[in-house]
Image (cartoon, rainbow over all chains, first blue to last red; front, side, top):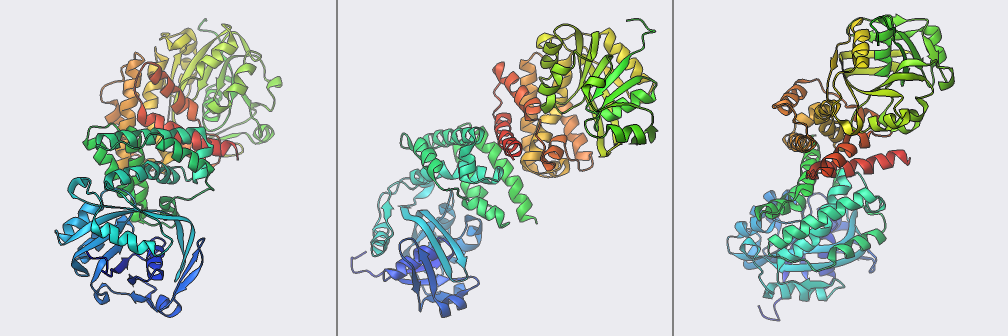
Amino acid sequence: MMEAFVTTYAVIGAGAVGGFYGAKLAQGGSDVHFLFRDHAHHVRTSGLDVRSVDGDFVLEDLSTHEEWSTLPEVDVVIVAVKSTANEDVAPRIPAILRPGGAVLLIQNGLGSEPLFAEALDGQGEVIGGLAFINSERTGRNQVTHMGNGGLTIASYLPDYVAAGITDWMRAIAADFEMTSVPVQLQEDLVLARWMKLLWNIPYNGLSVLLQASTAEIMNDPQSTELVEAIMAEVIAAAASDGRELPAGLAELMLDATRKMKPYATSMKVDFDKNRPLEVEAIVGEPLRRGQGHGTPMPVIETLYRALCFTNARITSS
Amino acid sequence: MMEAFVTTYAVIGAGAVGGFYGAKLAQGGSDVHFLFRDHAHHVRTSGLDVRSVDGDFVLEDLSTHEEWSTLPEVDVVIVAVKSTANEDVAPRIPAILRPGGAVLLIQNGLGSEPLFAEALDGQGEVIGGLAFINSERTGRNQVTHMGNGGLTIASYLPDYVAAGITDWMRAIAADFEMTSVPVQLQEDLVLARWMKLLWNIPYNGLSVLLQASTAEIMNDPQSTELVEAIMAEVIAAAASDGRELPAGLAELMLDATRKMKPYATSMKVDFDKNRPLEVEAIVGEPLRRGQGHGTPMPVIETLYRALCFTNARITSS
């Protein structure tokens, strides 16, 4: 890839996460095409309204699409749907990605990348993205960004072998540099994913199981013990997967969460809206990966089964 | 004790369980005195109305009391309050029990007996009772009995050493024989308690954790796996406590529960009424006893901590 290369983007799943990052790229001058399931027309006529702690703005004259079929072929497809929709989305990517392009999956959990790599069949790079953002979709054409916003990206190789820093990663980071979104390039996608799972498994899982905010979880000694027990299992699972998590990371996260405002995790928000829970990506896949390496994970397995029960109730209703 | 001995009873906690068994004893001709917290006057004037699958009846001219102070001294005190009230109840027993009498604790879980033995200080026998009954308090002076009703009783010795069959156990069984309540005499209280815990820990615990009936729990493969994992830990804990549970008992209970009508456990009923949960008697004490013998119980410990969180929310509200 040459420096003069102009990257074009499509954003699939233009909600709280995809809507924000897509809007920032467009604000920075990138050529971005949005797939909206429902409100394409409204966004086209009213613009995409971003209320952000970093400054409000409205993007007008966006390229918005209601159908996959009208999207142009692009260099990079950003997928920011819930992982529960991946089986539907992955097979549609090759039709809109130029050969040699890249898919950037901005999703929670573990295990999404292989599905997209399979769909691409070698015709493009798969990059995992971890969003450290606090944002919400607050209207038909509105996203509200309440804090943070950094993006960590790392390229995927089969079985999550560390892929190093690729040209596509640098190109995407360069485009985000035109905006106020800090992008971290990681050589090892699965290490980055385990680090995020260290927070996501306990807090997403327990917030649904206990029907509690992060603050309620940290204000009770018993649920705090559960968080710590789950974190210890994540650390052991990551270690058995060849990834040593930074020393003190668990304590850092416990402290930071203790100091945070009461926060509803993404899984709790999904639960409250009676939407399918990302149980497999956030809990099931890490569990199977750790247990596959022989790591005992009884607390996470208990959590997983309870969440499967709750999710089955939601999806069958 | 001579055969001609006429046993007098007091019933503390005349709700779904104590109200039923006390009424049956009175129906059979025993001299029974009831402590009602709220509705003593109403029961005195309207009678105690028992709607039972074994036949409805109304008991009139009962000896009902609003205060401990008016209760006469009796031979046997039946305690059928929730175990969460034990700390309040136990110290009051010596004042109403004739020396050499017996306390019959009809309660769930493990660990209540030592408290009462301590309060009696050798001046009476403590007998544990396990109610296999499906009953509800359905009005100020009404108890509805929907099925079963058997009582298993066993005498308590320090540290739950098997006490054999005592005279008091035979006397109580004889009085219940005058009615239609089948009483089983057990030599080993803690074996009987572990057997009941094999059902109570998974179903009481999961019914609150998952907000589900027994039928919902058994209709989902993941929650069924949780039941089985918990049962396996109970069996191991009992074994480490020197009690081998009968082979096939877990499968028997799973089958029976699968065939039962959808049922709200006592802990789920307490939860729904925002009453304190019997977490310690049903889950905490067996957990500590098993872990004290070195048995790993990670699933029950996870369940315990989650229930403690939920219970703290109830008791602090």
